[in-house]
Length: 110
Image (tube, rainbow, N blue to C red; front, side, top):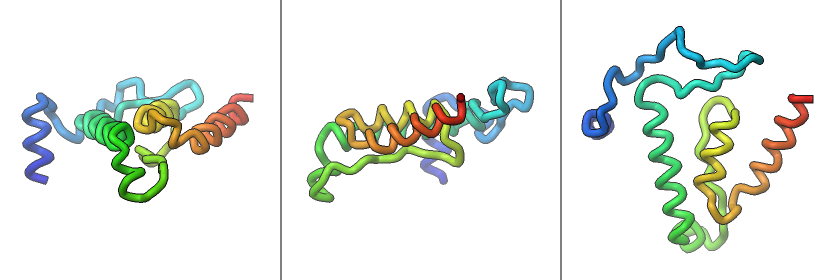
């Protein structure tokens, strides 16, 4: 926890955990689209960056002997989650998950 709060401080993130209740956190269907409480988006982005680096350097394949997706997720799945997962898996490791997600979302939009 100390390391995390030090990281927040070095990255200029104030009011960790605060979320503006008047912000635009939901779309017209009442689906959450906000960035979450202060600090969450930055940690989530850092996790996606680390995952991408591991995929690009072949670490996952070397350790597990196969190409496996890294799913950078949270409680709900929405377009920003999908984008982070796609970013974290630059060689198509998460294509099956992304295809399922796209199919699920397209079914909800109809």
